[in-house]
Structure formats: structure tokens, C-alpha cells
Image (tube, rainbow, N blue to C red; front, side):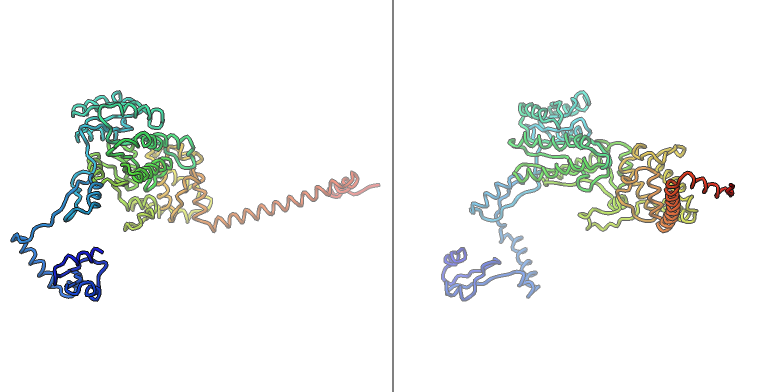
Length: 521
């Protein structure tokens, strides 16, 4: 219909050049509609393939005419990134001439001087870091919520924010308590400045192996992070927010030993962000890696464990820069982390399936010196008498536990004491498993430390795994011995039963015969 109407507008003998790709008319159809006009379908790709020099000549001619001012730019209308919906409405009216453009140079989310911004978990290092970020970007007010009053925890930090011209309001509230969140939001809504954004940074850890997790350890982690996010969603779904940022974790993307509860809580945040976007509400979940200097991971032991697994701590200033990029792109979910993928593969024994396109190979995660020690020990263990192998392995395992845990060489480890009671955490367990893999020369299951939580049980399993044939022979010998003993016991029992059936005179006669006595009249 559009083509036919356009042809009707042509003067007699006019030309119609079709540059579209769909609904191409045949020459017969054109002649039947208007015999006087010239019709041609033009495809630049076909022209280029048939005559490569033609495109170059055309481009040179166009450039010359543009420089000479003979050709004028096509008209266009520019909308800001945040005005994308207006751009689509404008296009739908069908009244525009030229192109409609969306400028992404302006931030998708702007911090405003006449708005307030709420941060939960504000007593943590990340809370104050981002409160300062809001102040640096001209926020009118930041509302800092935590179970403890931020002014009591970090009075100097609050004063530093206020010195930048941003008002600070503190609220005592547990994000995992619905009534406290409702009360907190009532305070927020009473603020003189309308709420424009939320950063949900509340969270706690309760790490333990899965077999040692219980409902209490899950609820402890779920309450502030999972329940808190949901309560915030419910209390703000009618507010015209610019941002609703959920601080999720690397754990929900890659998993984390000993953090099944924490990973599950963060996975909920990822899902909530997608759910809100589906409802047309702002939401972004950021899967942060561990932070350096601030946050839950800001201690030397966590840093050492993180590096061993290939995960590097995020520098605060680098992290803030990443955060700004996320606000500009405004994605539903983004993972922000610095990782040595090869080291991660070595530590875990594999790369997650959804990262399989990375050109990374997993190997036993030990250095060359440790590998040499493992090879020599394995050879010595094979040459040792069977009854000496288990003590040798127990000694070697204890030696490596001390190294992994940073214990003194003089410390004594009870082979029957659960390693978790000694302070072996989830990352240490992964490192120890990798060392044991090197010691026996093969991969071991990820559940190794769960199934065999003591040095004694570990050594028994490893000896059986390393020398299955010899262990089977030993078991057979034991079985034969036990069978012989059982037969003897059975024969003895049968004899006893027979003796029970004899009379006193018969028993006396048998006893006399056994003692070599002759009957006398």
C-alpha cells in the first residue's frame, strides 16, 4: 500500500528507486500499475560484488560533495538515555523526518541534589564508602540504615560526609525485620527530600560446610540480605525511584566453599532484580567479588585465601569506577570481579560450565616445589612396608595441615579430631584437598573433607585408594582367618551341644579316656 501510494505521487515518466529489502515489485506488476514510470530495486551489496570499484568512486564523490557543501546532513532528533521511552513514543507518531537517536553519553542514572538516597548495612565498610560516593556526586541527603546507629559507630565518617554539603540521616533498623523496615521507610518518606535511590548492602556471613549447616545458619544469612531486599521492594514499589541497587556476590555466580547459605541469599537478589525489571521498575544486582580495605573480606586471612583461589581483592577506587559504569549501562545484573581464571581452575579443579568458553585448563593447584615433594613422598610410600604406610601418610597430612593453616611445626594434631575444630575453613579445605590430590597423583572428590573430616579417616581412605590391590589381598587374608576362626567356633559349638546331650556316666567315661585312665572293677 505504501509503495502503490508513493508511485501515484510521481509525475509522468517519473523514477521509483526501491532501496528496501521487502515487498519488491516485479517489472510486470509495475507496468500493470503505471506503464509510464521507471522502477528499479537497488541493492548496494550486489552492486559492490559486481563492481567493487563502483563503491569506491561513489564514496569519493559523496565526500567531495559533502566538503563542498552540496550535500546537507540528514535531520535527526536526539533523546537522552533516560528519555528512551519518549523516543519510542515520538517515533510511533510517524511524524518525524530523519533519524531518531539516543545519546548514551549522559549517565543513565543521575545523582540529584534535591533527592535522598538510602543505604542499608551502612555500618559496614561498603556502606560508608558509597555514602561518600553519593556526597561526592552531589546528593542532597544520604540515609544510613543499620542495626547500630552509624553516628555512634563512625562519627568522624558522618562528619566527613556532611562536610561535603550532603545531609546525613541515620536510622537504626534491622533489614531482616519487617516491622523495623516498615518503620524505617516511614522515616524515609517523611524526609524533606524525596527518595530517589536505594543501595541494599546489608548482609552477614555464617560459613560452614553444608553438612554442618542448619536452619539457624541459613536464617542468619537470609534475614538481612534476602528478606531485607524483599521488604524494601514491597515498601518502595509505588515510589518513583531512579535506582534500586542490590549488592549481590560472586558466590551466586561461581559458588563458594562453605557459603551455600550466602550464595543462595545472593541468588535471590539476582532474581529479584530481574523480577523488578519485568514489572517495569528500576533494579540492578551487582555480583561483587571480595573488596580490599573495606567490606566483609577486608582482613589478611581472607585476602590470602582469596589470592590462593585466584580471586583478587577489589581496590575501593577501582570498584567505585566500575559502579559508575554499571549506572551508565543500567543492566539488570552485572558481575564485577578481578580473577585469575587459571588459578581459580587449579583451586577448584575445573571451570564452571557456563564459563567453558574461556581458554583455561585446570590442573592440580600446587607449585613446582610442592609437586616435587608429593612425587617423592608417593614413591617412598609405595616402597614402604604395608604396616608403615598409614603412619607415614598421617604424618605427611598433619605436616601439610600445619602449612595450610599457618600452624607452628611443634603443634600437635590429634588424628581423630575433626579438622574444622582446629580452625580449618572452607578455602583451606579446598587447598588441602589439592595438596592431597598431588600426594596420591589423582583428582579427589570435592566432598572429600565432608566425608573424611579427620586425619585418621582421610589417611584410611587415601591408603585404600592408592593401593587397592594390596588392600584387597589384606582383606582377603583377614577374611580367610576370620572364616577359619568361625569354622572352629562352629565345630566347638557343635561339640558343646553334643556334650550337653550326654549323661553324667558317659561324660565321666569320656574324661577318663581323654586322661588315659583304665577302667577297673
